[in-house]
Length: 113
Image 1: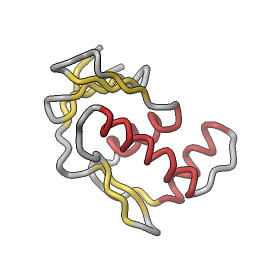
Image 2: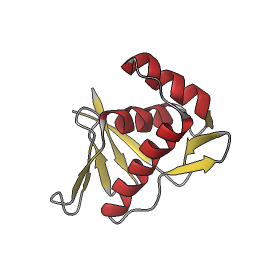
Image 3: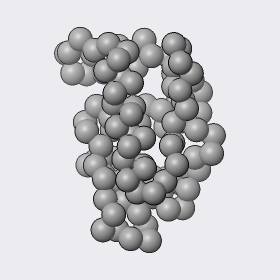
Image 4: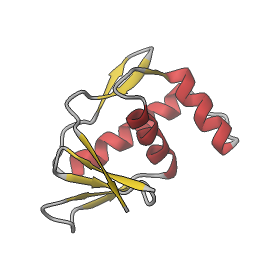
């Protein structure tokens, strides 16, 4: 499994969903299971817009829960909140009524764990 360094400032642990500042590892925020899965999906999308329906169906298949676009938006909001707690900008862009993408301002470096 691998992890990511985001914008040379934040470490994203893909196993735990933990986000931590590289300059102050005590600043830590942890994404929920669904938020982690959604964030990884956005990373894997390669900065392309992922429609809400696709995100909803992917979460539903993995969790066997009926999710709505509202639930997906709530999880995406949690991702944004986690980054704000670390003093970072929003890593995702929302095209309302259509989908979401990883911000093109996000620079990712893959590191092995």
